[in-house]
Image (tube, rainbow, N blue to C red):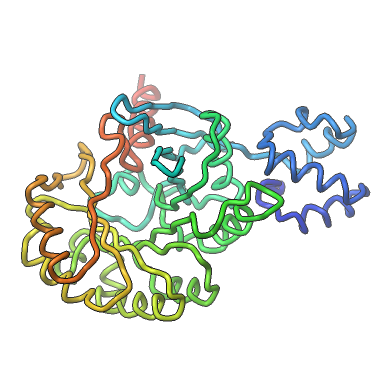
Length: 350
C-alpha cells in the first residue's frame, strides 16, 4: 500500500525526500502546501518542478476525502457532510457554528464496532479504521468548503477514537503542529465509550485536550442494555479511571448523557448519577437526541430534561443541556452513510 502523505509528520516527510534524492527544503514546501494552504492536488503546488510533482503523485498520493453529499440546516446553518474516501467508503462530519467560531465533529472509523443501541453509526456496520490523514482531511475539506477557519475539533463522529488509538494520536500530533493548521490541544475534545486500558494509556500522555465519556446511564443494568462495552468495563471501573484522569491531569471530564425517553431519564437515574459523580472534577452534558428511524429509542421531553438537570444541579453536579443542532438534516452520526448504503444496494438490485 502506498504511503498516505497526509499521515506523515514533517520529520518523516523530510526523510522520505532525502531518500528520493531531493533536498529537504522541498519537503517543507510540500508540507506547507498540504497543511497550511490545504492543497489536495500536486499540480497546485506551483513552486515544485514538474518532475517532482509527477513522482510524488506516483509514490506519495494525497488521500483527500471528497464531498459526496452536503446538507445545510435551515434552522441554525449546521453543515452535514457525507465524504467519500479514496477507496469508495463513506464517512460523515458535521460543522457547527458557535459564538467562539466553527467546530467540526470528525469521524475516526468507517462505521463502528461498539454496538451502542441508540447510535446510527453502528447500524451501518464496521468497515475499517481511518488513517491520521483521512481524519485530518475531513477538517481540511470542510474548511475549504465553508471558506472559514475551523478552530475547534470534536472526535465524536463515526467510530470509537480509542479503538483507533495510534492513528488518532498521530492525527492529534499533526493537527496541533505549528507548521500546519496549528489548532490548540485545548480546543480538541476526544469522546470515548469507555475503553478503560486506552484511557489509562491516554492519561500517560498528559495531553491538554478535553476527554468526553459517553456514559448515558448511571448503572450497569441500564448501560449494558444499550452499550455492550459496559459488559467488559463496568460503570464503576470506568468512573474509577475517570477520577484518576482528573486527579493527575487537572482536566475536567465531560460526561455525555443522551436523554432517552422512559429509559435513562428517570429521576432515580438522575439521583444515582449525581451520587456516583460527587466530588469529581466533571461536567455532565445532557443531549437531546435526534431521532433515528431505525432506533427504538425516542428523545426525552423538554420537561423531563429540565427536571433531570435540576436534580443534578441541586446535588452539586455541573450540568448543561447541549444545544440541539441540525435536527432537520440527519445530524446524528451515521444517518447519511446508512441512507447512502441503502440507496446503493437498491440500485444494485435494479
